[in-house]
Length: 131
Image 1 (cartoon, rainbow, N blue to C red):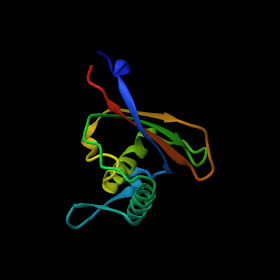
Image 2 (cartoon, rainbow, N blue to C red):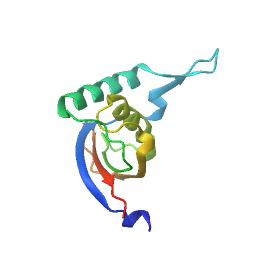
Image 3 (tube, helix red, strand yellow):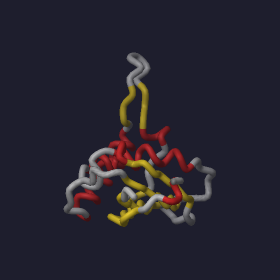
Image 4 (tube, rainbow, N blue to C red):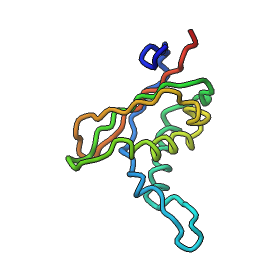
């Protein structure tokens, strides 16, 4: 069975702010070499957590998941779509009410949507149904 043949059951669709790039999300301590989340990343994470806690009153999913992300970029600058995934998925994971861990994502797709001032992402989450 290919990934395109996976049977899924719709769970939720989320509209969230456009995430910071990985370069604006993580920093490195020059002295110790350790990695940390920068101010912009922390603010994004808190914003997503607040949105999801208000929108969803559910237990986190623990099954295998298919996640499809529509990335509506905030401007016409050239962007790598894969740079949006880390901050977005980590923020959703930290909200603790969509999925228990992003490890459960077995099928991840990202598509570029239209340019929208300010940008946003629409995240479609589906359970993978064993066939």
